Length: 272
Image 1 (cartoon, rainbow, N blue to C red):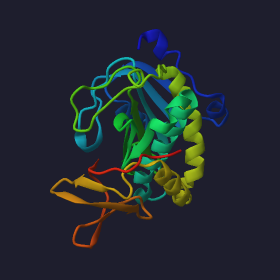
Image 2 (cartoon, rainbow, N blue to C red; image 1 turned 135 degrees about the vertical axis):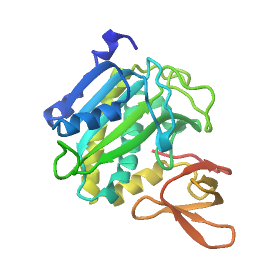
Image 3 (spheres, helix red, strand yellow; image 1 turned 180 degrees about the vertical axis):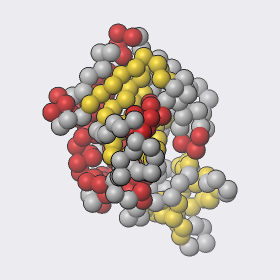
């Protein structure tokens, strides 16, 4: 992405009308870090921070996120929901918004798109987008009483990393040549709708149902890689908070709040 393209980033008119704001940078360390810095300086959501390239991008569990030019790197700063336990639900909200936006700009991808727990969007089973939710309590300097949360989104538009734990792809490689600015405009509108549906957690049951309709691996055998161990079992459901309910070989069940999931057997992908 060149400088001209970066500064061609625009919100969808529906997002602008709702009071959503946008700041763009050619280069940032991390859009999430910048969004939370702005919150400490007194900024309030909803505010998008977009960069053409990141020098210190990161994914879940502290992983580096390779941030080559030509892809979309964006974070949405929001005033945090009332309770921190609702923050992780924004992964599901964001995944649906990305899925919606991709269908808006590349409808032909519909049968090839799916969502993988907890926060990846896939094309043909390969990761095309990831999400990182980071929050900050109201105790920080400059942060309002409710705190702030950043929804970090990375979408591989023009390139993808070659060596990853889970296969990766990009829109161009998948035959959908969509520029980051076109995708971002669609995303800014779709995110607005999904956040309204979620309603600070009150509407999570409908978000959960929509997510499950698009998910990969539900009802299948999966490997769950946790911080301290690995578990294999059947992905049975999502609980009311978004945790993965894993049915173990012995018949018991456990709920996983965070981890990496790999589908070992699969009968079908997600639908939309």
